[in-house]
Amino acid sequence: MLKRCALPVIAMTTLLSGTPANAGDLSSLTRASSMRAQPDSRVEPAWFVDRADNSSMRLSVLSQTRYTLSNRESGFTPSDDTATIGFSQPRTQIAMEGNIVSSQFNYKLSFDFGDAELSRGRGNAPAVAGSTGSPMLLDAYAQYNFSGKRDGYYLKFGQFQSIVNTEEAVDSSMQLAIDRSLISELFGPGYTQGIALGRVLDNYAWEISINDGGRFIGKRESDNTAFNSGNESDLGVSGRFDWKIKGDWQQFSDFTSWRGSNEAAKVGAGFIYQFNGQTNPGINTPPFLAVTTDSGQYVTWTVDYQYENDGWNFFAAYTGMWVDFEFPGGTLGSLHNGLLAQGGWFISESSELYARAEVFWIDKDFRNGFGLPNGYIHRLLTVGVNKYLIPESHAAKLSADFSYAFDSLSVLSVGPDSMVLPDPGVTGFLGLTDEEFVFRMQLQLLF
Figure 1 (tube, rainbow, N blue to C red):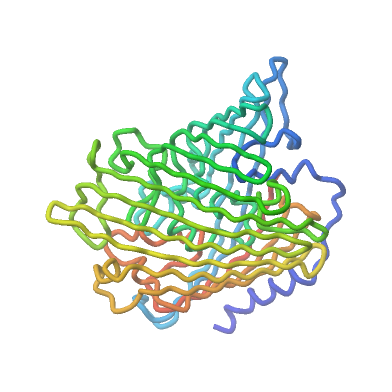
Figure 2: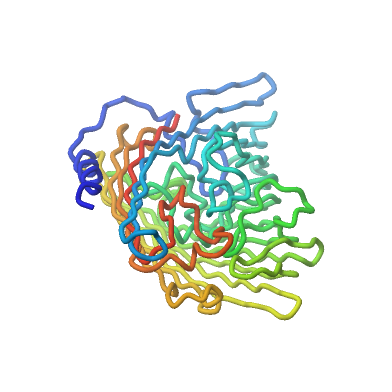
């Protein structure tokens, strides 16, 4: 175990002691995705094509190269000390966005060749084969801004990331830690297909969406499936409301607060309600039962607070989920809850320390379906460091962090189909163990 810890310790020491390269003014590489997914025409990425009819296309690439070490003890592993190590490319994304004739009519089209998004790679039996290098569709939407700018009413339709959960609303390249939390992967709806109406004001912003639903405990994301697919909900309705107390909306497009930044704060809440089996037969089978549900109703809600100031940041969120499976002989309802808190602090102009604590409770009825004596409460801690190789930019970032699960994750990973376990390609946790330690190191390039 001591030898396995040598690389993580050396990596953390190197990140803290190094100095950044001075790449000059590379503001064109620091394009941050807006919390409301509205393109910001004030900043143009390096690759930009403009046509005479006012149509345009901006091309950007996100590349994440990651090394992961998972060390599991006891539980269902074949020995008392089992380590799994290796490199991966969780995200290699290509995005195209711009205007459609009018500057008020925007679009975004993006693909991912990695295994960290959508259903690919989730659990031991993914719906779509992972690690193939083949692209998967992420964003494919158009948006009309009625006022001709980011502030005001907008209408969006197509496939897009749900903004119910703030961690999901913040782009994958703009996270504080190497990746989103296990709570986000467990509770977040993910990508949806539908239509959304929203408005951004000086101090308030809201969005209401009608869609095909998202993931919940016991079900993967629907991906880009047909309207009659059993993986899709009959209907999903989601909403998000944010109150900006201080600062600028653009500051909330990431969790980082550079040194010298102004104070910014907001509070928000979101929800999604979805049901299936009423107009289209579902194929959802809870992993601890051999019976397919006739129908079901599912509600996820969240309340969060985000704060940034001169060189430090803080974020906290509560998320709840009610899952009601309906079978021919009765129903099974379960309530799940999660709490998350994270913060970061710049110890130099380019080095940022961060920590994240998360705890969630799995409903006892759901847990007892596996026949497990433990797994009710889950506590996890992550500590790490970011090294921004280009000052005040996510364009080139080297990160390393440690995560530890204090409690058994077996309830999330046993059964004939372990799709309940959040994607190991994102979290690093493999489950089937009483305790687990994860080390990750990542180089991110955004251009």
